[in-house]
Image 1 (tube, rainbow, N blue to C red):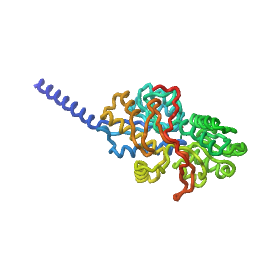
Image 2 (cartoon, rainbow, N blue to C red):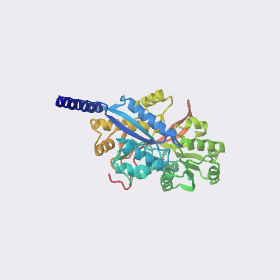
Image 3 (cartoon, protein in one colour):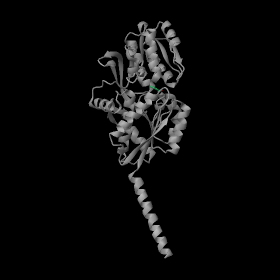
Image 4 (cartoon, helix red, strand yellow):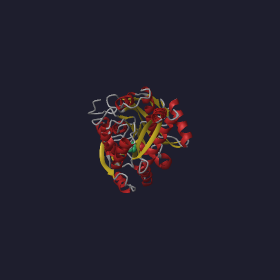
Length: 395
Ligand code: BEZ
C-alpha cells in the first residue's frame, strides 16, 4: 500500500512537472528592457520612442514566433549613474534578452561596458555618441538612430556653401553637445567658414539663456549653430525669438532643436530655423504615411523622428527574432541577427553599416516654414546615404 502511494505521488509529480514545463513553453516570453528617460529633461523623447515601439509590437499582436513580448522599463532620468544601476538590474535580475536605449550620449557611454561584457544585445534608438560605432563599437551594439557626426557634419558644408561665412556655436555641456559642435566645426572650417566663438550651457540646469544670447549676438556672426532637445530646445527657441536673435543672424543647428515634437510648443518662434535630421514627416512613401496615421490614431498626435527611431527598433527586433525562428537564447546569434537585418520603415529602407553597426541613411536639410497647419519642416536639400565614419571600429 505504501509503495503504491509512493508510485502515485511520483506519477503526479511527473505529470505536474511535464504540464508546468509545457505551460512555460507556450507562454514563453521575450523580455525587452528599455533604458530610456521617463523623467528629466528628455522625458518626452523617451515616451515617444516607447510609444512607437509599442505600436510596432501591437502590429504583431505582441507576439513573435510564439514569444509574448514583455517590456520592462528602466528610467535613466538622463543621469549616467542612475542608468548604470538600471542597466545592472535589467541585465542581472530581470534577465532581459534585448535592451533598447538610451536617449543621451553620456548615458550611452556609461552603460556601454556592462552591455558588452554581459553580451546583451543593445539597440540604440537615439543616443549619438560617436565612439559607440567607432573605437568602442561592438557586435552587441547596433545603432538605428544616428551618430552625432552623421547629422551635423553635412550642415557645416551646406551652410558654408549657402552664404554663411561665420558662426557661433552653442550647445549643452555634455558629450552630445560637444561632439555635434565639433562635427559641424570640422566641415564648416574645411569649406572656408570661421567660428567666432563657442559656449556650452550647463546641461539639465540652464533655464535662462539670456546671457548666452547676448554674447552670441555681440559676436557679429552670420549664424548661430546650436543643438538643444527636450525642454531646453523649447526654452532656447522661445527665448531667442523674444530676444530678436533671428533679426540679426540666421538660426541654424542640429534639427532636434526644432523637432516636430517641440514645434507645437515653440510655435512661430521656430520659423526660419535651418537644421538637419534623419527623418522629416513629408517623406512621400506608403510606409511613412501609414506610420503617421497609425501613430496619430493611437496617441492623438503626429510622430517625430524619435518615434520613427522607436518604431524601427521594434521592427528590427521583430525581424531579427523571426529570422532565428524564435530561438533567442544564444546571445551571439541574436546580436548577429539584429545587426544584419534590413527593413523598410518610415525613413525608407534601413541598412546597418556592417563595418560599424551604425545606420546608413539620408540626411535632410530643412527650414521651418509656416505651413497650412502651422510651422512645418520644408526640405531644402537631401544628402543621400550618409555613413558614420566609425574610426577605430573593426567589426
Ligand atoms: C544625445 O545625447 O545623443 C542626443 C540627445 C537628444 C537628441 C539627440 C542626441
